[in-house]
Amino acid sequence: DAKTTQPNSMESNEEEPVHLPCNHSTISGTDYIHWYRQLPSQGPEYVIHGLTSNVNNRMASLAIAEDRKSSTLILHRATLRDAAVYYCILRDRGNKLVFGAGTILRVKS
Amino acid sequence: EAEVAQSPRYKITEKSQAVAFWCDPISGHATLYWYRQILGQGPELLVQFQDESVVDDSQLPKDRFSAERLKGVDSTLKIQPAELGDSAMYLCASSLSGANSPLHFGNGTRLTVT
Image 1 (cartoon, rainbow over the protein chains, first blue to last red):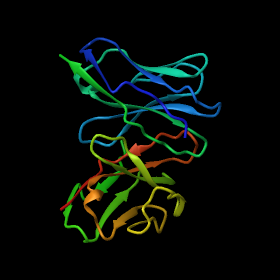
Image 2: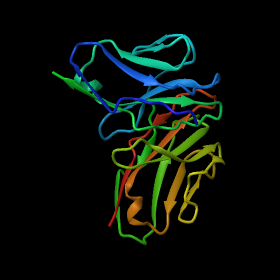
Image 3: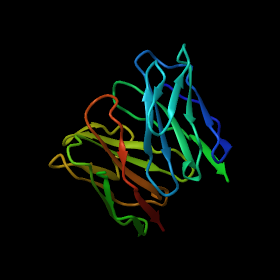
């Protein structure tokens, strides 16, 4: 399974944008980039995924580098409810979702 | 919005005892997953079902763990005998078939082995 590298933790101020980076230099051509987040005492929650083009949904935006070796999850206006562990995952055709340690996002009011 | 149901929410058991967890996936979701999450780590896949068939159990400790999904709907994960190192959160997830269908997770069963 191709691996991702994320910072252990990040901090943001409420109402400000947050850019969560992810490096995946060994990504293969068929790997999709998925993001999940896990709020305290809950199971992980799907956020967004993409292959090559940037993607937007109601929760976040995903910016993918042209060489696909890195990506950034963008929360446009962080709220206290966005404090969670954010996981960047490469998902292959086998459907398998392999989680790393993720990035702990802290949001300050 | 439909949810993945898991029970019990918490379970405390003594080592060497048997323990079982139950999962009811979202209706229509053919793929079901069991994950284990140790405190401070990301979830680790234990077993994946496609309908009633196991498609990946490479990380399942088969000497003590078993999983079944007899009618291709709900699923049970069993540990016998439980060991202290099995203390963790056990998460169930389901998804539609398809390489990039999002996984929907339940809120898990927190197991403590004493």
